[in-house]
Amino acid sequence: MSNISEHKKMIVQNRNAYHDYFIDDKIECGIELFGTEVKSVRQGNVNLKQAYAVIEGGECFVSGMHISPYEHGNIFNRDPLRKRKLLLHKKEISKLFAEVKQQGMTLVPLEVYLVKGRVKVLLGLGKGKKLYDKRDQAAERDAKREIDRQLKQG
Image (cartoon, rainbow, N blue to C red; front, side):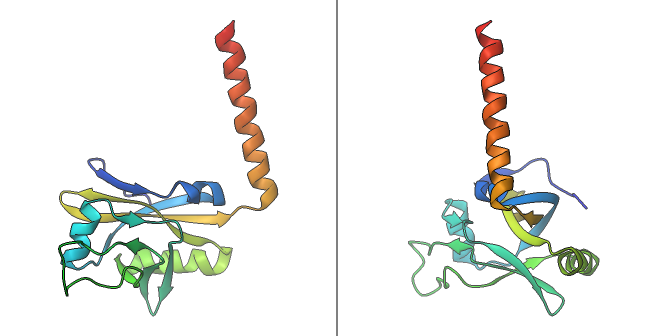
């Protein structure tokens, strides 16, 4: 399902998602934004910390994605936390919906970036980690770091 663009200008990454979820699959999708929101995204005023995606009525939406109001954008600014529609094909949405319902997966926005001037969102299909999974991963990372340190010293 991965159809990720190669030439992209990174805006923001959700590093917390990799800590909280086992990411199985990734999919790139467009996002429906208004003009002042696009300008704010280009400036990097996006926060993905509490963001998640849901599928309702055959359409995919991202909630909790905070896009700060554009400072030069008077009355045209929108609510920073409003639900935004993600642009996916019907087949992709139905496949994601099936995996979310059957396997208890979660749709998590991983990255926001620009491709040829268009704002894209990288959605990850992930399964939530338990506390002991996070501890195991931290222990593995520390052990690997210690091994690398010992090898480097001689």
